[in-house]
Length: 200
Image (cartoon, rainbow, N blue to C red; front, side):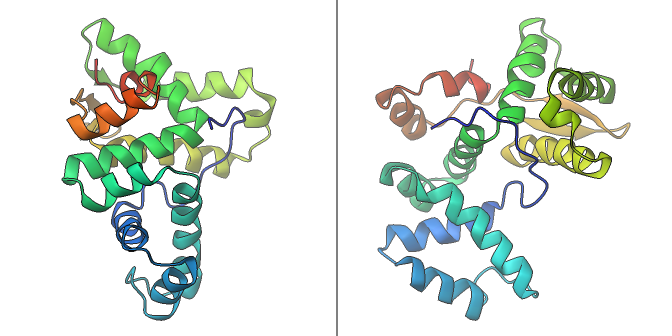
């Protein structure tokens, strides 16, 4: 299911390693109780604070709970690119701001053969969302800044943006989606996500 409302995502943008570890446990048949025990008591995520463990686990479980087993298997057993881009697909499903940034800015730039994303491009996009959406306009300044930087962080972690100097400029990287994930998305009628993953 695709979320239509904007949500202020200010924590745990990508949690790659943590998502892989939980997916591996789920793939091996671990129950949610087993997973909670491994993360919260045995410190599977190697996070010192209990609050951080709880928060990261909540993000990962929410992301993986509504997902067909095939995608959990891709994260648990795929190569690094398959794992990373499957997690990006799951984040795209739940993050409207991210989908719109890719559709309205990155894809337009790629069509114009312009692979440089500047801080001005990002400012224009995020400020535009503030003007268009009363929900985004209602966010505090710090929430707005965190949500914006988290959105960029997802794209960096997924490998679609490469930070450049001067700071806050990025190179857009269109990378082919690995075949097992591509085939699964097409089989499930979710081929439009391939475009959002810059597989064009």
